[in-house]
Image (tube, rainbow, N blue to C red; front, side):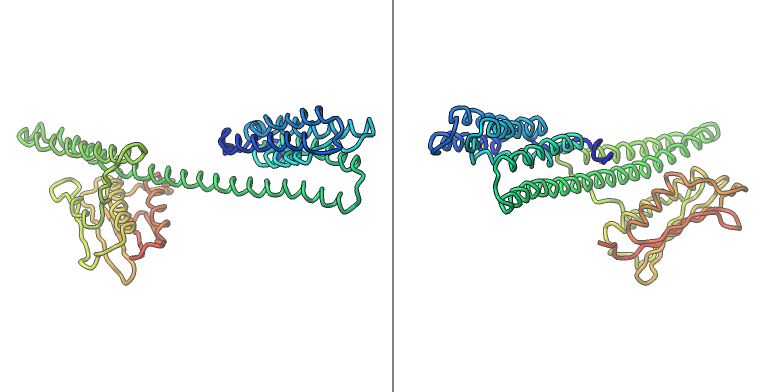
Length: 375
């Protein structure tokens, strides 16, 4: 009950639309026709005028469900009190059954507090109306079931809408995580390459000034690629622009990561059978290798060689990235965003992932992915 009391109003209540205006018009015509044509209706002008009060409540029922329900059912309660006070005939119109729409709207779009207050008020009015009608148990039972059925239908639709919104939030969260992973992989790789080139440039400029231009060109190329990939990701986020999607990098692009003359040197070895992979697996292998290379360049102390190898073993693809850097003694540190992102990529595709130091020195990253990605 405490949770319901503090439950916020659902965010899917639409504004007043054509259907609401149509419903209000139909209700107005029904009230006027019944108020004029119904025989033996006591206090005809007053009853008809009070019934017309339901018209604006129909228009307010989505955005202001509690006031609409209190006004509509308040009119029904007022007519019941008048009937009991003056001991006259039935003062209600059959068209006032539209108050059930207000009950539905209260349960469907009201907040937890509004539902508690509104349903309590409606219950009092319903019990008072049944007492005033003095009908048999069958009519009383049928009327109660109708009211409960109306509320139950509202609960069902509210629950379905809540599930839909939760699903949308989960999708947005997944997209946010995927985007963060792509940004980290892309930016970290290129920025690390720029940092390495800049460090080498300081040495080259003093010893071999003629090669400084080559270092600056490499830095410019890495920066240009970084900006291009960042702009491509930003364009995907814009709904109002047409995006020309380029195929993602894959295993065939891994040789471009090789750096035979850099420090550390990067060697890429591909199995000839690693072809015709599904797009998710193909792209994941490239990103895993790229991030592993970035970590080796940034964190491997005194590393002179990084090896990237991709092999196929039956229905699985194995990626292995090793370096010969020096490992820091002591307890292992908590994994960073890079390792966490690589593990998430592998798990999403139904594979396995491991990363850690080797006894003889260096660091090894291994990822095993199925040839066919799970659907």
